[in-house]
Length: 354
Image (cartoon, rainbow, N blue to C red; front, side):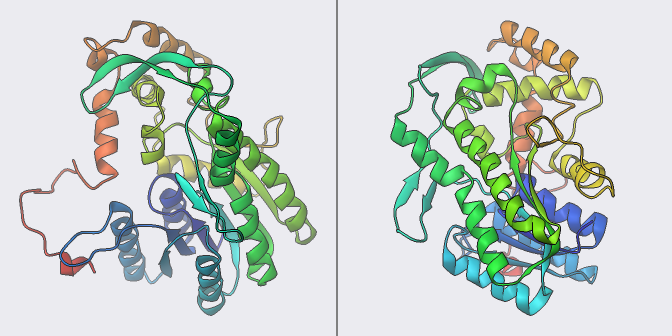
């Protein structure tokens, strides 16, 4: 396991899981980057801010280093602040996790604002989707994107920000010899491809793979390299915003849990680190050089079962055929709700969490 880890995008999901696994399983020191609303004037912060505060307090009790920086991770200001913190507290980092998901980006050089979109490329797309607020299965049609939409989505969610981070860290001398970096991606089944793999977000994820090769060429002289890891579908703020995906995840969870092979974010990242990236053996890569921990999701029997359910599911049988209840529970947890043992009617002293 790595000893000093920088997590760019540590609010929740796979980014936060990377931080937890590196520390709990490997005793690593971590620096987490995120962009969350902080508490002020009696108003609570957003959930990601509390996630990292709670993690830092846990790490401190265990005598482990954990620090965080809240700000725009696309900006040079925050990059430089991270570099200063690494130099002061950690020396060098041997793992950089790039797990940013954002709807917009301000380019640090030009100041141009880019906005990402979730649209198909080439043709309109119609399929089932899930209104998660009302628990209704309905059809949705998404119109195709423009060429500008593709370029803007790549600018926000593609590989350039990852490359800039690595270049800046390397120039500042805070990357250890044999340093590794990983960015997270997704492929999924064909039913999601028009709005994911073959859509604007898929174009951005393809650009991550381009960036991984460029970063590897820069890190390899000192024994380092960069990976793109293809992970399993989980409930995140980003995935919940993609049409079709929440319904697919609800059906997928049902099949994975029925077979006893369901993994949450922490289990996924533990397996990625322990069995692939830091196993002491050469990582097993697919034909495009990617790490794959979506193997349980993509088992033939799982996908065949989900495909069969997809044809049958509607608003009336949603709860019977899917794990929509599990999906909702995971979504609520992203924001601190639905947790057992918590009295949500009890007043909270916010000053205790500042």
